[in-house]
Image (cartoon, rainbow, N blue to C red):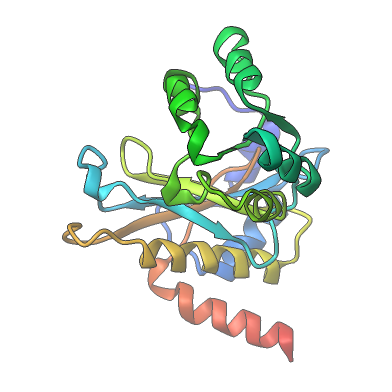
Length: 243
């Protein structure tokens, strides 16, 4: 069993693990329990009622958070010729074709958060599945990371566009900001993620779809969100902040 430090244990004293909290209250609790010396990331974990063993029930896609993520993604692009020039001009951190494929294959180079590829290079990139796949870095047309519009893809991911996918037990993990964000920003980002997951619900998924959701900071305990109240509470908080 994992051993937690004193600050973590003190923080958990204010959280009832069996209770569900409104979104705004959960955000306030996560922010107040953050005690690290760095600006912790706020993370959302959602348990979905799907069976990831069935290909048609894998929930995946991309979205851009309204308030951003609070960090700049490191983007690698597998492209050649004019596409490579466009990738560099758009701000890609790593650009290459055969040389980049070889670097990943031979050196295990994965110092990036997002991988984008042009369709003509996917034959080579596909050979990197055993390296990129487990890390969630394999380019895929469904997430907009296999594309001919390289400039747009790089700009979107550098600007905070996120890729999501259910893990092997049906959970989706996404960062929804930083502890330094305002309550309204985290609420808005969390709402956007939940709306996106609802939109992406597989037609074959039966029964309860949104099972549970937990909000936490990098070093803090999780706070369970009352999903039945998310829309109403988020709308109230955002309306109040705008007035």
